[in-house]
Image 1 (cartoon, rainbow, N blue to C red):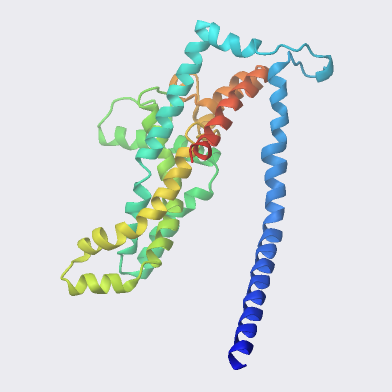
Image 2: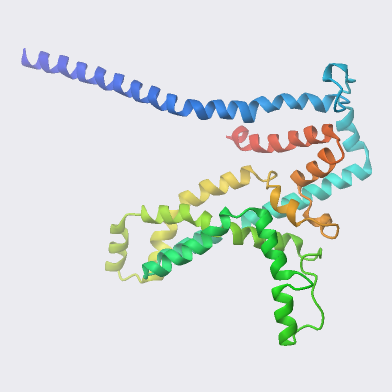
Length: 307
């Protein structure tokens, strides 16, 4: 009799646990619902605009009164040699910028590891604050800072180099097409290094301290602890963020390249987003915007389709 009562009480407890689990999942769904609605409104609803790529749309004329062109614009992009070279040039710039971004994605990991090894708390916080602050500055202010440093007339760097006698005349560091990809990568690293390292610092704080104690018992020094304990502990976080970066391979941003572009460096700085803006928006070629958005969205969907 006692065992029967025990089984029934166990069944009741199991059922109650299931109801609590279902209630918890429903609560999580309600918490996520506003964000799902935002994604639906701002990520999926705008996909309706794709239809403009198949029409000869002109502003002010309703879409219903525009001529349906089918795949005419897409065929034109492939058939025209000039247009094909332009697209290849833009894709080359986009791939180069994204490739350099992926290649330098390990820098926040290294920075976070060495920052966590700093013993003095005030110095560690100071370094972290000064390296994180640029992330909150807009690219317009970053360009203003770059102009203050590298301006031809009264830039700090030119003035310093001329005062020391290293150069005879000012250098056009912002108005040059030499090493444009590298310059953009360095500016992006300067802006995002501290912010990107925050996630790795949080991951380091989550590593079991007993692993460090065991490494010390085995005679490991600080560098061996970093290599054999900290680095393996950061790898899951690094690869997750790396996959997110790869997912945005073609969509590598707009603001930075827009504020740094000029007539001299446009050949190497014009990435896909900037090209769509320059050709599609400034020249009112709205079908260009739509057909290039196909490429970006397909690139974003590729990791999900490959799984």
